[in-house]
Image 1 (cartoon, rainbow, N blue to C red):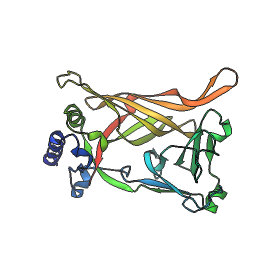
Image 2: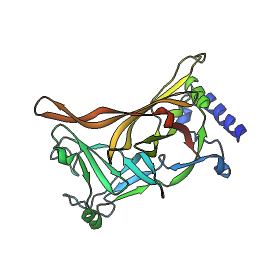
Image 3: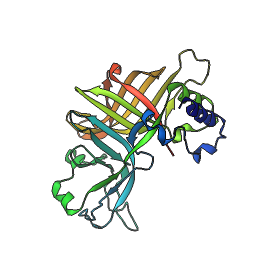
Image 4: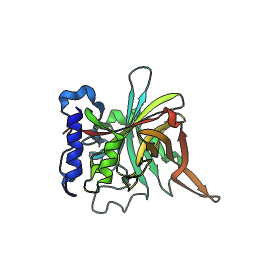
Length: 283
């Protein structure tokens, strides 16, 4: 296992700048599954919206598809629960002028622990339209969200190996680098799975206290009895989480009448309850 991992890191360090875009990140074969981790498929996973073919809109038979941007696992007493977040989009209709007859807002669909939801935000949106659960009647009529993100085996990459890849300047590991962050909040344990598309790291290889600080949005969090959109940022030294915070989407008030939704609230997590595991998917 260790020999295969070293070979993987070695290949990452010597690949030319453009090669990693098409090179599969393979380290350990599926026969070593016990030494890997099982995670939802964020690499090829996707959500089909209106999979039953009845959205109730002007083109009820229209369906749409997005990537799975992130996933949230809630470690309950019984079987764990999963929530999946799709890609956000501007409001649009289907036709020759998609923006002409739609409100100026952004929306995102998600499959939560207890059903499907739409979250919208924009200057002109009323509060009641910002966070809506899809009714059971609508689901029965066909307006369902079909998540296709099966569990896959992935292989961990240690802190030092990720740092080596980033400092090499000759590879692009963030294209296929993911992370699982597990933490405690509100008396419960959660795990977030997301791609690492933005990472702070020391440029110098001689830095005496090397660190990694990924930031990722958007992710789902569970707080105050419901799901929220957030950015996650966490600071690691020698693989240990030293700080973990969420910037949560909330309603900000400016003046007497103007209120908009933005990532305005910071949620602090006890770093002693948190762990972070970088991983990549087997080819």
